[in-house]
Length: 209
Image (cartoon, rainbow, N blue to C red; front, top):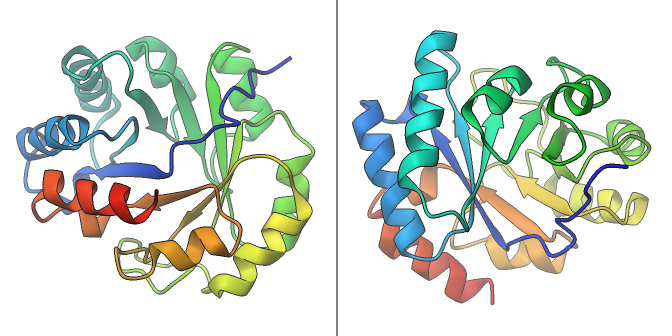
């Protein structure tokens, strides 16, 4: 059986996207600031670097971050295991959730991205620890984003699953509370954590209490 130990999902899920930062050193510094501010769930995402660099980055993040910070690898279940991370997050075009579970085993987290109610239904039926849904709002962090689902999309997803639900896409300090009120357990944030990460994270955590 899978863990499903994220029933009490942290309200804030920080996405460390190397594509939005000038260097890995900048990403590393951002991760440390976020951890210092109290963020306990982070995802390392790098779409345009080699697997060797991804592995090196992931191992370095695991080395420097406190053990209470759960660190998730985007896309690559194999690198998650090799780097000793806590789990993997897969998209609709990546390894399937079942395949990811086979690779990482029952003791690690598996999350999956969904973008409509049909995908949420499928995700609810497979051994994942959380379901991400979005984009809730317009986002500039993806070149070809899926259609915006809005708060109503979050409500629809909530009605289809009892698994932890992560909302993602265009979420800021100005709108994050409305996303929780629509039924999300957690909000995944990228851009609105990049400017003064510690201060931004502290503000998010205060709003999301």
